[in-house]
Amino acid sequence: MAQKDFDAIIVGAGFAGLYMLHKLRGLGLTARVFEAGDDVGGTWYWNRYPGARCDVESMEYSYSFDEELEQEWSWSERYATQPEILRYVQHVAERFDLKRDIAFSTRVTAATFDEASERWTVETDRGERLTARYCIMATGCLSTPNRPDIPGLDEFEGGVYQTGLWPHEGVDFTGQRVAVIGTGSSGIQSIPVIAREAAQVTVFQRTPNYVAPAHNHPMSAEYEQDFKGNYRQRRREMLQGYFGAIAHGHPSSAPSMSVSDEQRRALYEEGWQQGGLGILGSFPDLLFDRAGNETLAEFVRSKVREKVADPEVAELLCPKDHPVGSKRMCIDTGYFETFNRDNVALVDLNAEPIERISVHGLKTARREFAFDSIVLATGFDAITGTLAKIAITGRGGRTLAQKWADGPEAYLGLMPEGFPNLFLITGPGSPSVLSNMMVSIEQHVEWIGDCLAALGGRTIEATPEAERAWVEHGNAVAAATVYPDGKSWYTGANIPGKPRTFMAYIGGVPGYRAICQAIARDGYPGFAIAGRASPPPADFVALMAPPHEAEAA
Ligand code: NAP
Image (tube, rainbow, N blue to C red):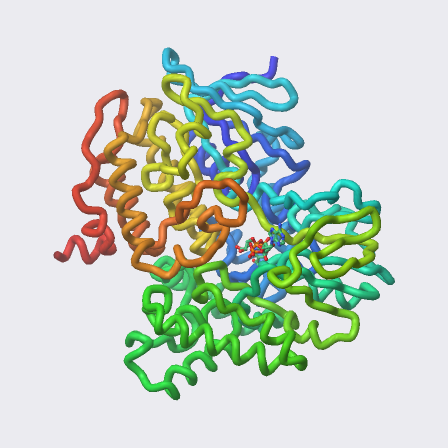
């Protein structure tokens, strides 16, 4: 008879779930993974839209836990495409023989904590019921696509494609009139590719985004060899980066408004020429100081005006209603130039909102359009969306949905209070989407692994006092930044009715890591282990110094 009880159940077989499984095996613990897709890969399994590619450099967007794996894998481009990343994940799954513990095409529907046995019962859409001491949610932050509630969408007789649920066989847009709704990262990556294929592309834009050029190029053998020859040092540099990535170029350590306009522009120009998201780190205060932020915002707008031939279209493509970085900055390959093509048109939804989708097209407040296909690049119910679809019940029959009705809360972003032995990988209240996800995933997996080893099977849970203190600390850190100014998926603003809170932790990767390390080292203050609670640290900020500095102090 198939095994029904495990040390741990892991939900999701993306980067987080796979490494968690590998880690638990190394600890001698039994684990079962459930995955909705029919293969590994998580976000890189689902997001197969044309042009899909990572916005973190490929040498830095990979696991660091195995040196042989680091050395044997070669990335072909500066920024890897979705198919290449998927091949990498599949390679990892084969290499570490992970698939034998994964149930594919299986969605977890419920997870219930039994207070008497202190175990989780997990149920799936295939009617399975398994139990485990620990339940680990590796469900991803961008894994529930947002299908907008536009009247008539279901009546459209052409093809409707969501970027986050792209057909595996691909879509041939040759000769078609295509509507693309949404101009976030997914739209910005896919629109140039679709425009090269389709007869006509009409882009429906609600909010323009700040976009930096990718300047993608084939991986140079020299760069790869240098990186591989110095991997440990490079990984350390990544951990020291605020966002878990290496600061390339020459970022200033001076405040942005303390230098001359020419010096500032020269630094932005260097970041622009280098390409990628690094331009946001040109000065240390760009995400904190609104005046400094506006200088970068205006620099980006000036680039849009240079690239787009029609001044009216250029102006519509210039973001003006939010600070740069407060919504996720995008990186592009030929996005703005695409609007110089004869077969591409931009529709400003602020001037003419969509009224409805019809059988053959779309009607705005001003016009009617006929389309063969509609692409929904409308994003995700981010960070909490996938957890909300699982009926997760903790102590006293309280569900996670009830607990999070006014916004998600979890101690360290790792454990919601009232849900013993339930861990979230890159959950709300952790750096997650504000960092290189690979770095944050590995940090959480390793912290959870160390925690389970220390527990030896005992039950752990966050105390209400610790969770409150962490949420207050996270809110205070966020309030000092420009992030809350953006109506973004970071705040739930993209989903009608979703509570508005800033969901990630913006204290930076090094500081957050130091806090988590200190908490593990000090015997897990703020948690109750086997019923014995200890108070949370009096001051999280005091724990943020890297361990060597704290020891020297
Ligand atoms: P997104 O950033 O949330 O963008 C969704 C777009 O759809 C926005 O322009 C949004 O407008 C629009 N939209 C949503 N609902 C709409 C409606 N009802 N009517 C009209 N427009 C609507 O989603 P995404 O582009 O999929 O990106 C999400 C995140 O995934 C990114 O921020 C990034 O972190 C990650 N991602 C990364 C990469 C990469 O690595 N390069 C690629 C793709 C995605 P508003 O802005 O007005 O809400």
